[in-house]
Image (cartoon, rainbow, N blue to C red; front, side, top):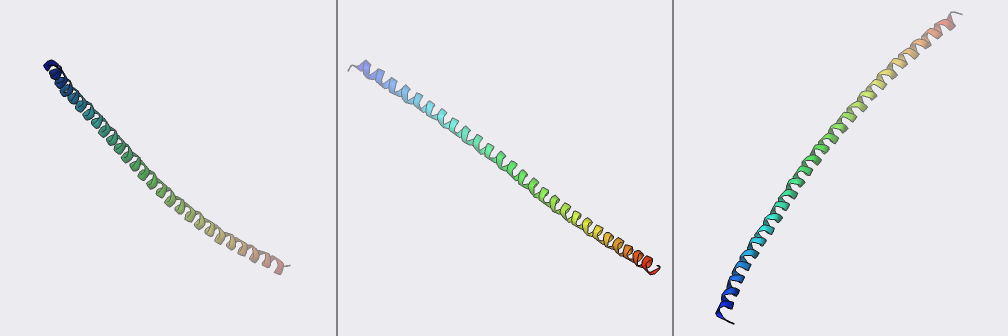
Length: 99
């Protein structure tokens, strides 16, 4: 090989290695950006899941409160119905005594 072939090979290798380094750096940056985007996406999903869990807990609490409220109303109505039935029995007894 002649001197010029060696010079050409040297510059080709130097520029080839430089180009390869630039391409590899670009690929590394792209991988880093993708990983960062996945992390940000994962954090957003995690925050949304926490919000949904909080909403579910609030709905459960609200449901429990409504069930207790309905139970209280049923007990109150049962008490009133018992009082009405008792009063009706008293009226019926008076009517039967009066005959």
